[in-house]
Length: 141
Length: 140
Image (cartoon, rainbow over all chains, first blue to last red; front, side, top):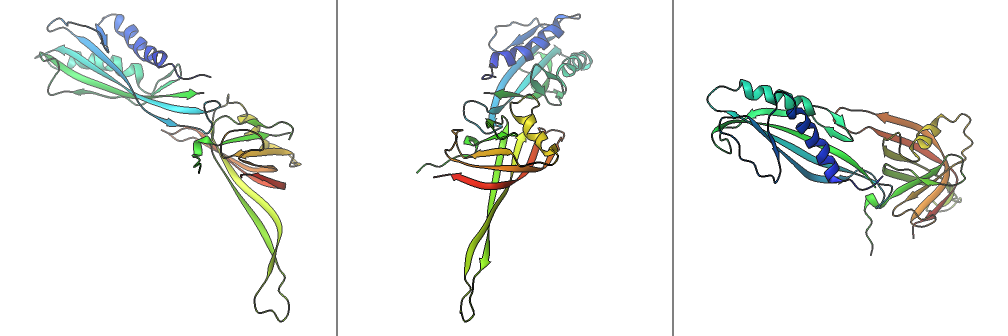
């Protein structure tokens, strides 16, 4: 085994979302560090993958050893304002089902949180909810 | 002074006692060595006296279970060895994995194995062992 490739983990996470939201009804999705100008009153999704604390999992030095790499995926769902939450939660269910307790390509997703409605959407002019999923991956050195 | 952290340790094992190999996924180990004593107090003595006698050891190795990890299966399943001749060899390292350095080595028997699976936690395995024969210390 080798040190964990963070972009492989990121691709696993973001790839699932991009594939799902590309299918009908398709919804634009934007990731970290990407320019995007949403169309007013449209639906779109923002996916933010972050790696957090790491910890020793087993004994050993830089070989024959394992670490646990933790992270979180925060997914913001934006839909038209003033028309209720239904359309937003339809998207939220699609996203939640993608990750909820799923184990794929060595990435273990925990039980998903949300979609939670946010009182102050950013950017303004949308109804915003948020789905959060913590995940972990085992690094074998 | 060189303080050693627990993650620097490792465990090597061979069920047949020929060539020890590192068990990948070791989370912790412990060894307790006990020396029995014999009372050699004579009549007329005011204070009891003792001499050291037989030495034995026992301990535990805990693993993060991974069926594909090198060395784990052979270690866990050694508890199933019938009429165990105590031919398995262990070397417990406080740091590194250089044979005969910063370690304690011995032959022994795995006396019990416990594997546990709990929601929200990793599957872990705990094996207890006893030593058989000489215990060699290389902890200096």
